[in-house]
Amino acid sequence: MDLGINGKVALVLASSRGLGQAMAVSLAREGVKVAVTGRNPDGLRQSVELIEAAGGVALALSWDLSDASVIDALISQVENSLGPIDILINNTGGPPPTPAAGQDPALWQKSFNDMVLSLIAITDRVLPGMRQRKWGRIITSTTSGAIAPIKNLAISNTLRAALLAWSKTLAAEVANEGITVNVIMPGRIATDRLRQLDEARAKREGASYEEVVKASLRQIPMGRYGDPKEYGDAAAFLASQNASFITGTVMRVDGGQIQAI
Image (tube, rainbow, N blue to C red; front, top):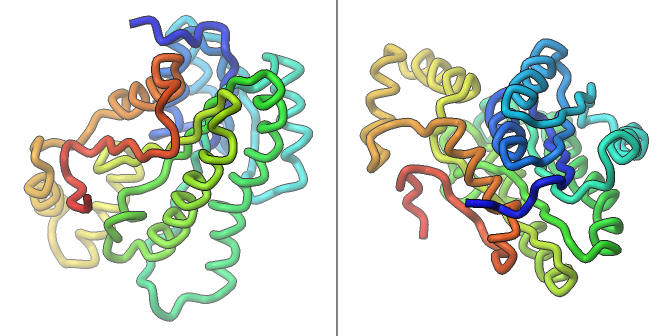
């Protein structure tokens, strides 16, 4: 299927590994020119290599999302190197596992700045150009915990739920301007981050890693973890011309796991 986005330009945040990297590579396979960002030079190099191996064009940017002062300069660099940004993939790393009670307010504030305000500011920077061209795709990657809270991930659950409300509100504001705004939500996708969470749960519960994985698989109707490529391909579809009448929605890539309606 031709997704109709060959030659478009995408900015994929936090894409030096994991789900961000998978989304960047899937877009590249569709002929999208992709700017990848992250703080790990080795990871960024790997993302560029994977994009180029898929026949794509990549630009790597060292970008700490907690630093709002660099947003304009880095986006200008993308525009000067690849062209105006047509597709924005909002993605961030996850905060440390924590319960809801007793957390330092400074941790809440830092996480809010890194995971919410940074994405809003970046979106506000690229949105005027999308409006001028009457075409754009804004896709925010969140977590299933935003609608079905996950134990010991209180900060992630809370702040990513805020992104759902923001995305839905923005979608209505720009729907008649050729711009779609959607959320993509992973279930348990086999990334390094998921392995870290499973290992932390095993340590917390005094169980083996294998026992934790088996327990998780019992909660997934498909009986397996997702492949990062499956997640990336879902994001590419949301970015496509084919998805031009889909906006203000949440796409779950979860193998049927999420129980909330």
